[in-house]
Amino acid sequence: MIDKMAAVVYTAPNEMTYEPNYHSTQVDREDDVLVRIESVGICGSDMHAYHGHDPRRLPGLILGHEFCGEIVEGNNSGLLVTGNPLITCGVCSYCMQGRDNLCSDRDMIGMNRQGAFAQYMSIPEQCLVEAPANMNPNHVALTEPAATVIHAVNIAIKESYLDIKDCHVLVIGAGAIGFLTGLLLKSYGVKMQILETNMARHPCVKEHIGIDAVNPIKQSVSNDYFDVIIDCVGSEKTSSISFDSIKAGGVIVNVGLQNWTSAINIRKLTLQEIKLVGCYTYSMEDFKSAIKYIDKGYFGDLSWIKEYPLSEANFAFKELHDGRISSAKVILKPDFKKQ
Ligand SMILES: [Zn+2]
Ligand SMILES: [Zn+2]
Image 1 (cartoon, rainbow, N blue to C red):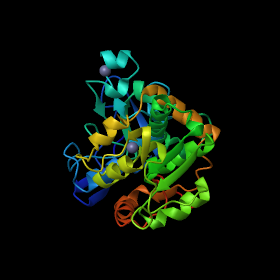
Image 2: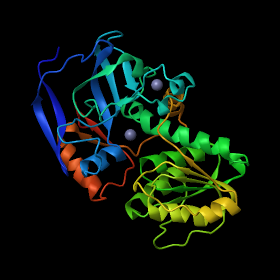
Image 3: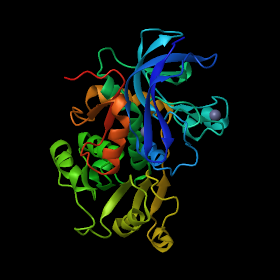
């Protein structure tokens, strides 16, 4: 039982409130453990909630689901862990098939349970994955977005007629998911182009992925050219770019969900046998692969991560909202120490 903890509460659209003396916390339920949070990432879905656009995430909630921390209460105290924020039932047909991301009875940390923008969080032990010893907590906290990327790239590999190394791949968006996708494809030796409208992100793409990002508002994108497209934005605009740019027989993997309606070119899809595949989160297996891939350097040195103290969460969200942060991932630290 922890008497008081600091937490960041989503109090109203465009308002995150740091509460140094948020109420007490403890292990919430029988199968839970208590984790002391070391690092927690801000996800695009947290931004979406912050803007008041997610009916499932309402004011009063502690957001945050990309975390690294140490178990302080319950089994395996002292272990450094991250965790799959999807709490799945383990018994439905999807869970039995290893497609647990499609579980028909799932909860999610930072959505219908309190999240990780806090000093402590209660989470079912079954969700946790042990981090390799001495791994940087900021890198461990990247496991969740990295798992999304592994899931998406594996779908592209499975659905593409051609070997991924022989494909021209288009990645749309250089936020966390697009950027990590670029890094993984780079380590696989894949030829790619990356689209990003925020010019502040272009230097980071150049430095870490080694290619010039293309701004589709200013530059044209080749039509009927790409074998595989991974859309990490998912707007009407990017959907129409995808259908214009995909080659006959190609695969479009849709990961982003900026707009909940979209434009599908059903004529091209049919006449040119385009595969359009949806991609949602990750399985527990992807999650376990992700932490290994990060540790082995498949995503590079991760030197581009930007840190803020948890107490400055509101400022960090504003900076992200204004597009002033060039880094693809902002990490909040409850116990921030200046380097
Ligand atoms: Zn996330
Ligand atoms: Zn299930």
